[in-house]
Length: 89
Image (cartoon, rainbow, N blue to C red; front, side, top):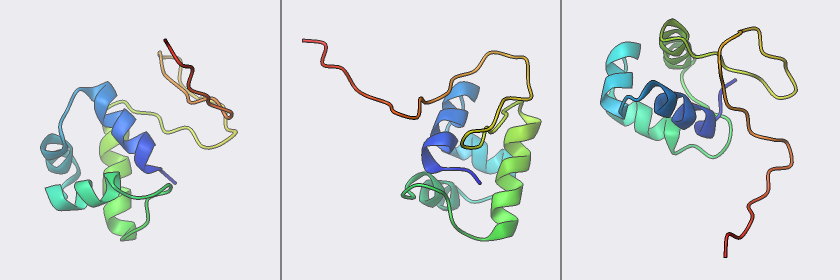
């Protein structure tokens, strides 16, 4: 499973826009836009999700599931379970 925030973060780590991700995954830009606009876990056509995940994997993105450990050894970013936003004023 991949969530919309994970997808946006993965794309940001790669430094690519939605059009470039769509090309890599063999999907349309509107499909990527719908996926990124999803609330929580992305739902949709299984084939499209598999293409997306394969394209991210090929680009070097490791998707880490809730409570799962990382298999990779590269640098990464992970959202804490109890994420809080602090006021900087």
